[in-house]
Length: 327
Image (tube, rainbow, N blue to C red; front, side, top):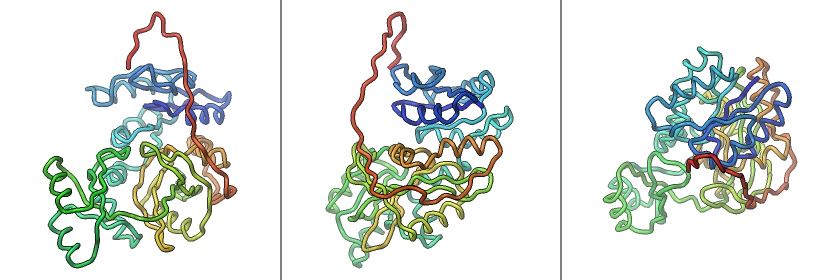
């Protein structure tokens, strides 16, 4: 069995976990558009590929899958997920299974307003969202929402171009500067993250790991502590199974006055997934079992509480003499 990890970047731990779980039964191949992406050097083999926006990019990936006899392929960056889901049948046609949810569901995850509408339809608590600023101003006058609020792109990732604003004047400036913005209720509560696995064969949610976020940095969890709540587990399970997610997803959640609100959903490994792995929530192993045609048993909440993750800096040094450096 061979696994292909696309756009590996700095996600060394994910590559290492797959290598550990696959052992001597196969290989882990990685790609990136830069040979300064440290995670590719933890793989058994890596390919330097064009940027995902380059013409014919997906053909390059399909060729790698054929050449390396790839069993399963996954990506670690948001812009590539929709591409992977869209070309799912092409991959299946050459014997490679994309570890990704269906295309329409992936697109919904990256359209924050569509996700808000879906959550409302499912009667799952979510932060209020407005596409139209005039409708928002009317809601303020009615007392349905108050400043501060977030102004953010309807489609975006990595917490880019998100602004906390306190006045109508600030909203007007941002809407004049940028297109495709929305206004979202400011969630002044405790933030949590959930690493979730939905079996690719049965469609059952088999793993949920919840962490209380202590500190964030550049949109990712920097410090967190493991915790459990059966009510939250039930809400997440209902949400992911009814939506039809498959594989691993990352969910951002806020708790305010005892109520959990789903904020964002990312259909990939989250940046804080290493916390789940070291606590025994082994999603690479779940993926490998599914790719072998085996269903995973349900083990929701099968981990210890009060285990703390603390990220820290590390460096990789390589001799690149005789090689062109591709930043």
